Length: 410
Image: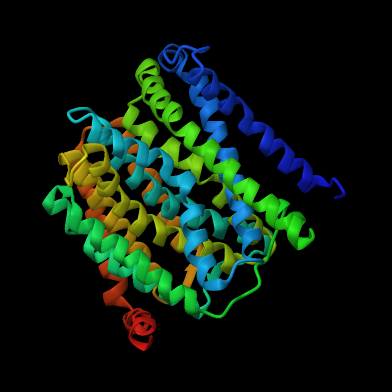
């Protein structure tokens, strides 16, 4: 194998996973005091966060290459589950601890991480793709393929149901059944779609060019190593992030909600940016749309499951006023994003509105973290904008009806 620039990127990424693995092994062997998480929280957060980012890149590259060798029906289900591991590791840790250590703030952090990941993807990820496309080719809008209506249909179902959760003020077994059911239903549909040869870039393209037997072995090693790294990083990263917030005077809720998802989703943003820079903005946005489906179904559904595992019985994760307002705001943003994409187009103006609203609510949350009315206000603004688009444009109403066609036909 000729060691090209992608090869160097792969090597650097693997090396970036070594410090956190070394740290965890030293803790397990008793050679490193676990109290280091509290005494040197910023350093531990950087080491563990780097491990999650590097592990996430390895998972992303391996998942892309694996599509060359795995049957379509298996690939869709398996890769969807494996690819979300980096994004969910921190949230699942908090959810489990919320069940095993009731009375603390872990449940608060689990909801914060979930809502932050979903809002970050729409508010920052989608506009980022349009911006890259405009800088590359001065394209002022992105047109989605018709096949993407399937994602919009499931996103609509998940979003409409999500509005019931703030009124219940809990995530329980019924939410597990609904959200995981939607995810499985979505997977069964995508598994029937015509197989399309993946467009590989960077290290994934380099690995894809290897002989099949060697490629398969390397991909499985990457999966196993990355999974181990991510699981090893979840606890120290989560705990040190909370502790670092306390020591630096930054609300831990804020760091958990925005910094943790930004670290785990950096590979998706990077890969989407590469597609957009190569003139494939539709593929880039479609990739982030699929990720939104996973986060808005599988991630939300897993929280009550993992919480119950920590509780050692079937239970519901109760929410306070801050958490219910956060979830309402997240649902409202998803609804507005759906109305924006209803006509299968995403323009610079759409991206600007999403980005401005996202940054405005994030900044106000940072300044006034306990102001629940502001979260509600932004949620209402999202809903008003969504209804405005729906009522003012007949073509969007017709397009929204067409969105449900894939579910009625199959």
